[in-house]
Length: 200
Image (cartoon, rainbow, N blue to C red; front, top):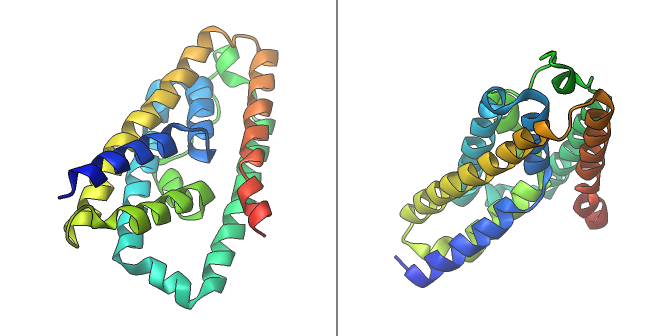
């Protein structure tokens, strides 16, 4: 195993997974709206779903996209449409956490895992991981190592964003403040579409 490449990959993964993106924005909003415990299935879906995505890309899905570029375009715009839907749902969500009413529901494990397949930032990270760091070890152990590291780093990142969102419950107490927060998070989700639109 190349330890220099390993250190480089850890730096890349921390930078990529801790910075704001659709997953982290949704996790923070879920932590605020639903609390830590109810957001745990969402965390598991993000971390496991993304690790599986990277493993499958490493095994050969990238070659499928090279042969069928239309498939990648369809996934990209399906992901953009779903992000618009999630942003609207967040913007229109009732301010339940601030009032103590735990109505509504966070994203499920399967919903969060399936979201990884249409998450543009996730695809960029997955393809960057496989193309730049595959030489970390011989195949297929390289894909096992990269996926396992992304699982571990992704779990710490996801938990950090949920804890941050949960901690905001002490600050965002009124229904009006929660409404403003949800609108801001919806705007951030829409802003995360910029790479898709710019790439068009």
